[in-house]
Image (cartoon, rainbow, N blue to C red; front, side, top):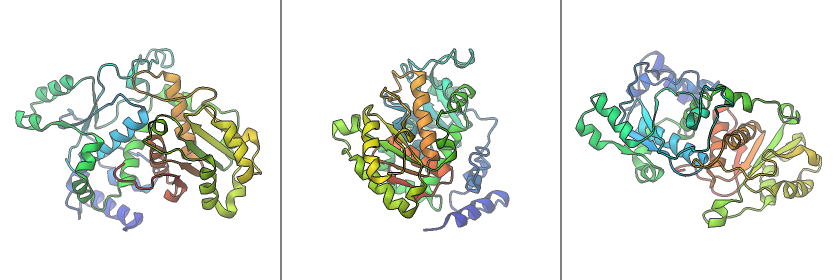
Amino acid sequence: MIGFKKIIVIFFLSIVGNVISTPNGEWLNTYDVGNVISTPNDEWLNTYDNPGLTCTGIERYPWQECGIGFNMNSLINSWLYSLIVGKNKDFSVIFPDGTFNNLKCYEESDGMATSGWECLFNDIPNLCKFNSIQDWTDNLIHNNVSESLRERANGIKMRDIRRDRSSFENNLGEIDYLFALSVLLKNIWNHMTPWMRKDLDKDYDNTLFMESKYLGLHIRRGDKVKSGEAKAVEVEDYFKAALEYLGDKSNEIKGIWVASDDVNILEEVRDISEFYFPLIYREDIVYNSGDKRVVTHSTWQDYSSFVTLMYDWEKLTSSELFVGTFSSNFGRLVAIFREAEGKPRSSSISVDIKKWFPL
């Protein structure tokens, strides 16, 4: 596999010198999401900026009546697919009627926003938002997109990407798939609204998770397990995986951040941790959600639930080691966030499925 440094050099040269060695290189010359991440790897996207954007791309992602984890994962995959395969400079997301009905933030935003996606994120360059397929179609007509192109317009879902896997992989070429997803995800995250950012930056009363190395766990016990879509994994297996990775450095771990859709998980983790991390105090094993089960379903969850979940995402991203399940969209997104922050890939461990593509 080609190393990151070589990939960085290839794309940096293609940008600053207009020297494109890949077949799909030309569209990269107009792709700039700004300083998306702090690592040099983001330079392959540093020329994507189109202030005159009219949202004329013919591909879109229709937001689903599911949790934000599923939708965010599907959105960045669909967006990347549109960029790589369709060579589209902009991409659209459609929020149908009923999406984010209970996500209200008038008070939190001091009246700057009222509800919906605007409570979470500001406008994102080259990602266009519409409230219906009709609004999106009307925009294409208004911007003189030809009828023949409009007839080809379609919504991209994960099943479409899986169906066209070979084309996707061939067009990716030397672009690293996981890294590319991380840049798009971090680009969305960097456009978070200031009130959401403020809520996420509130001081946590345990400074250990700001000053010391800690283990991050996401333990899935909810819908996918109950439906049989994913197998339940014993808590011991999470700890075994952590110790296998950490080895002699396990004593450097001072706390455990637990995220789960099981409100009863904390005491179980605390009890079992004594056999694997005996030096960690029980009070330094925390469950941010408290006594409520947080599932950010797009059609009925409120603002505070999104704050809790997004805070978990950030704390798990900052952990020394993350152990979760890649059968979970939440777990996969944590790994993608960690990729964006330059964490070693090996420090994001799945205790069930291991494969990354197609997600």
